[in-house]
Image (cartoon, rainbow, N blue to C red; front, side, top):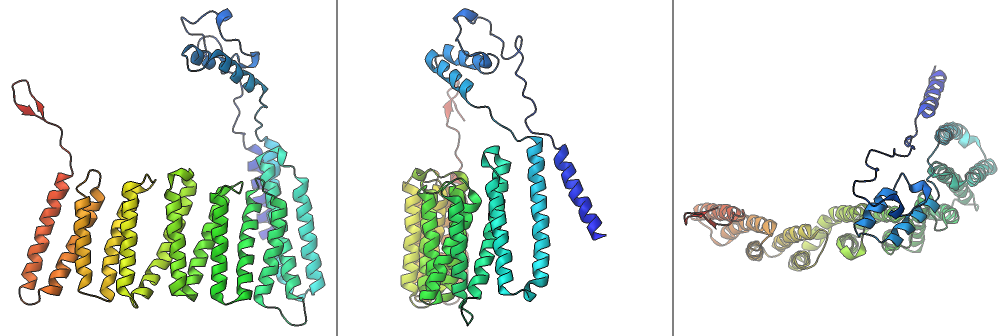
Length: 484
């Protein structure tokens, strides 16, 4: 029953791929005569119009004529554009047979891999090492040659098929290296050695297939295997903390290649580096909460600054990858790191956090950044948090610093377009003012005093919010009265 169901699924997939229509069906040229491409009334006669090659007479010749008459481009520029369009090779769209071939190839590859996986899982324990090496090696060679036989000049479907076949070949080569590394020597080798050998084989093969071309799949495996190999080398040279630092260095190096435009597909390198940086942050926190946390925080803050720099001209997706990665690393490492240091030096830790928040606020207010408003709001919150951290060592000093910070934010909020700073400052005032009263005014008067101060602050906040709504300018009415 299961075999019949599987056969029906394969037949249905092939039928859907066969009847799928191409996207670009309407290839007929627009009609001449009446319509948008007709010669407008008042235009010069045909003998005086721009001379363009025949194939463009019914497509863009009219647009070039309009732009030339409007003075947007010269007649020479219009003729050059027309000649370029005629000499440009036609855009080739994927035909129905290409789509069917791609679908059949993927379905066949998936079925073959599933069947191979079931066979290997069933008989792998019974196979000796030479048979395992021969099977994985032959599979890697066959898939690699199949990918090389597929031409990339046929269009995007053939490129994707080649990348997929080479990815499967790389995985088989990694299995070959894994088996060979484990069977080498009389005693079982260290796990780090096996990981290093496997990563080197996968990385070198991926680099050979990639070679700096537009092959995102091979670029991803090459960069990822390089980071894994660097982490394994660091682990062989030292402690688990060294391994975490090695992965962190590899992630930073891959991100530097992407930021410096040293790779053909920047978004792939950025994603690989972002994932590696997040994993390195987790490992550093687990093995060394103090120095490792500082290293992870430094990397996250640097990523935030880079993603917000307008001069680097990042695409929206690239800036989003860097910013989200920095946010994830900060969420993973900031609480643990601050707790670790505040227990030992609350004043120094809180002061550094306050200084970091104040710097982010100053940078967001003075420099042209993509997320300038977000930098100001985040810096304001971080500054208030730094003041609160001081309470781990000096409980009486923390509310004073927090109250002064809140007042400073309220002063900054009086400027135009600084509504966020005023709200954050008001919230900081509502937290730190009662805290300060409780610390310095004990006794029965404390409760009514806190209530009075809190109510007054709420009134001041309401007045400030009302002041933020701009009013229409007053104008003199005809009768001498003022009107809005």
